[in-house]
Image (cartoon, rainbow, N blue to C red):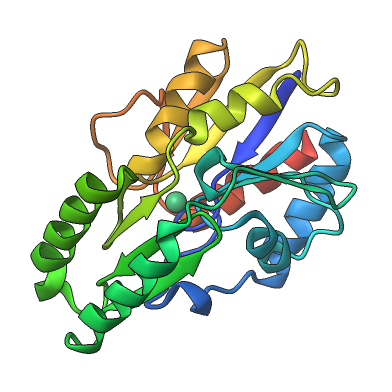
Length: 235
Ligand SMILES: [Mg+2]
């Protein structure tokens, strides 16, 4: 599948299992090794595409100089270390403080401050899901931010990009031109990327349980993704 392809990889839930807290994910040695070898094999035709800040993804995966689209396509970290970013909506500072006060009253709800967004994670407090979504929907209306749902989380972020636009942009890079995109992702936020990968003549691979999706292939979990990536390496 990767012959003549560019490979785009979501991170959380695709390469690593989702952890109770977003800062608790770990990249094991086998994954690190496979990603390093793939990056060399694909020679400029591999990128990580995440909702996390781009630099955070880069430090988590531990690759030398990765190409990363972060913050849902609103940031690009280039292999030379330069970061291209949309401006941070000023209202996020106030929102973060409001949400920290809200979370202080709901033990287990975590506020994640990102360069271009603010997220509420309720994995440790599932009964707070409705309250979190209501708060986020109200604030999205009030501040004109993009409401992004995900697994056990909701985020308000700068509008104007998604993982699909990220893949379109990255496909303009000289190394990727004329190739077809293969994208692996697990969450709602990955669906635009799966649509674009299929639309550009490539393939989407959904990670997780079957659900309505634009992806034509499916892998059960990050362990299956790692097996598949390793298999692609030896071809
Ligand atoms: Mg994911």
